[in-house]
Length: 182
Image (cartoon, rainbow, N blue to C red; front, side):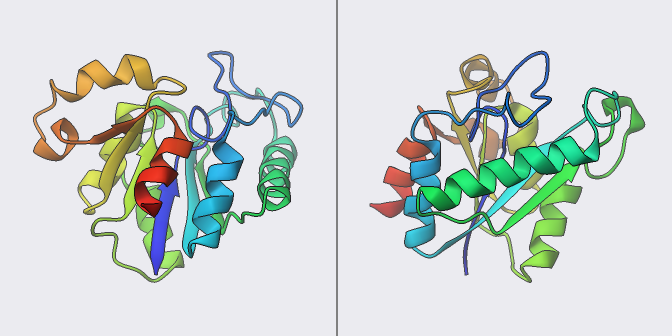
């Protein structure tokens, strides 16, 4: 199985410091859904792993989150792609749960759901915590410069883990797809 794990906000859709709270606010980044379509057509299983503390903060409810995810899946399908699974953490950072990235709980759940080893599975994110979530499980960290990626890029060289120091870096998800498909 060819699996790829994507963060949501800042990778697939525009991020917001005020949180993406509604399906109307959920806006795809240019080229991201086409990238999902190209990866789908190449046989990739696409999983999304996303922290969604806006739920615990009371900024939106589960129905609105599901509406955002339906919109994302529908737009991906209209582009010719498919999102095979969406895994999210609803907790606040101070809850210290095992699923909130940088913890690896969401990534482990993906491995269980798809019954696969995660060694060298590309994990695409725009923040350090996205990449950290998959390192201990053998994922290949890929940073995109969209979302918070430009602010994250200089932090990679300061990390103790060689895997983070050597993370692949691309301008956006479309460039990641170009790399993986060539």
